[in-house]
Image 1 (cartoon, protein in one colour):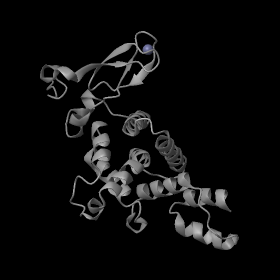
Image 2 (spheres, protein in one colour; image 1 turned 60 degrees about the vertical axis):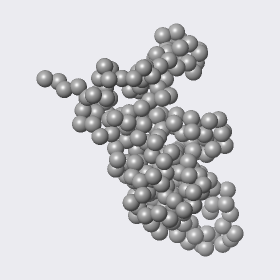
Image 3 (cartoon, helix red, strand yellow; image 1 turned 180 degrees about the vertical axis):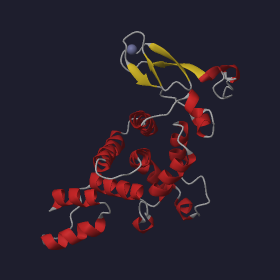
Image 4 (tube, helix red, strand yellow; image 1 turned 180 degrees about the horizontal axis):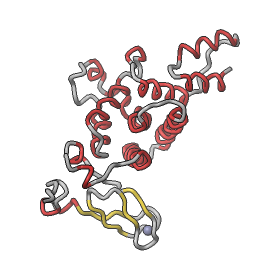
Length: 234
Ligand SMILES: [Zn+2]
C-alpha cells in the first residue's frame, strides 16, 4: 500500500495552494500547484520555476524523495536565485552582487570539495543575512541556541525544502562572516573567500610583492582563493 504524504494530498489543500502566475516570457497565465517546481507555458513553451514554490513540508517528511524528488544542484541554484531576487525586489546592485558571489563560489567549487548546496545558498544569501544582523545588532550577540537569528534566510531555505542541517550550516556561515576566527568548515572557508573576492576593489596599501603575498596568504583560507587573489592583486 502506498501511503500518501498528507502535505501532498490535494484533498487537504487550501484554495490558494493552486494559483496562476504570469509567464515571464509572454505574460499568459500558467497554473501552478504549490509543490510544482517548474511548469511549461502552454502558450509560448517557456519553462520556468514556480515563483511561490513551497516545499516546506518536505523538510521533515519521510516521503519527500518520492513526492517532490531529489532537487539537484542546478535546480536548487535556480530556486534560491529566484527567492533572492524576489527578496531584493528589483534592487539591481544587490542582486548583481549576489550573482557575482555565486559565480566566484562556483569557480572555487571546481577546485575545492565543498557541499554545493551549502556554499551556493550561503553565497547567494549572505548579504540578506548580514542586513538582518545589521538591523538587529542585539540578535548577533545571542547564543547559538537562538533559532530566529536570520529569519529571511531561514524562510527562503525552508521554502526550498532544505534539510535542517543545511539551514543551520548556511546560517552559521553567514552569522560568522565578520568573525573569520569562527569559520572552521571548508564550506565556510569557500564562502568567505568568494565574498571577499567578489567584493574586491580594496587596496592593500603596499607595493611590496612579498608583503602582499603574505597578506593574501593570511586573508584567504582556501588554496583556490589565495591563488585567485594573487592573480588579481600581485
Ligand atoms: Zn509563455
